[in-house]
Image 1 (tube, rainbow, N blue to C red):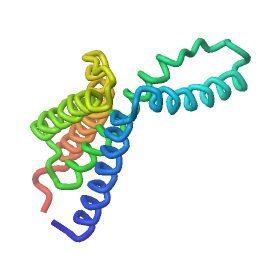
Image 2: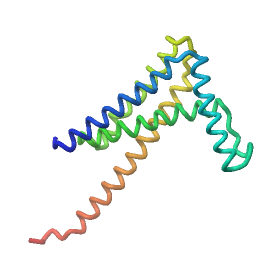
Image 3: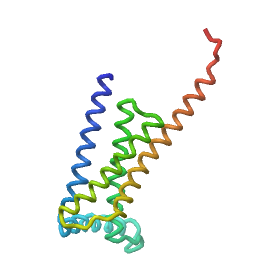
Image 4: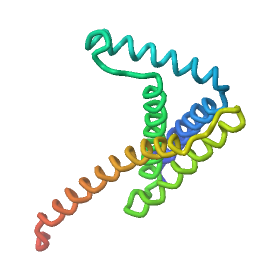
Length: 163
């Protein structure tokens, strides 16, 4: 592995660790602290949407904001794991299948940690988390397929008799 790849792997790994710390740290908050934190995000998002589209034009709820946060955190994690597999040279059909269990594992641990903080874990949150993760991985997979098709098309256009 080249020096550039090693640096890329290290940087991506640091981002994954930071994202995991953020996700799992939020899960260990008390219910009151979590609600306060997401309430602040909801308030800022609501204010921004009202400023852009007009007051109450975009129907936004606190619960939807929380679920959107779950989806977004895990979409970021899906991006990071996809980039990690690309950086270590494991980008392939199988590579994208192998990256999927990581997201499910993190989502399950995330909800399990909520038991420690006396919050109720929810299977729907695991599904929302995993959907965010899968969405990001799927986008990278589609890009991989497009790049692969273009590469094959270009190699087919090069004359074989060329010396």
